[in-house]
Length: 88
Image 1 (cartoon, rainbow, N blue to C red):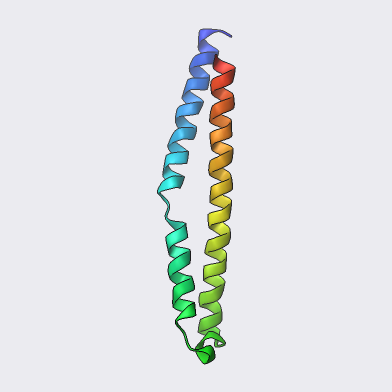
Image 2 (tube, rainbow, N blue to C red):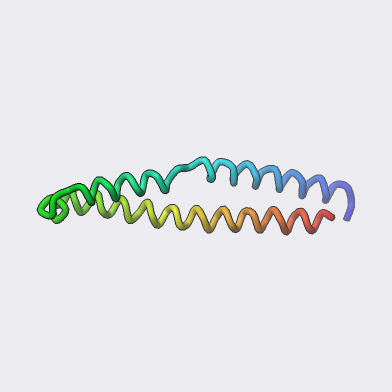
């Protein structure tokens, strides 16, 4: 592998690490917990209301987003590891 290829790989790793860092800073899990707590603190009647259902749906969507972010972070780390291995 030549120097230019190693340089390109190093640049890719830097970009991926930056994206990973930004994703890690997203606190989606806390947002999901807060929405879930709001829903849980509603009375049964309010939970069944349109607003309650929207709150629950938001919490569910945030949970799903957190799962997707976790998978993305794992994939980004795998990409970093593989690129570093390729550059050795």
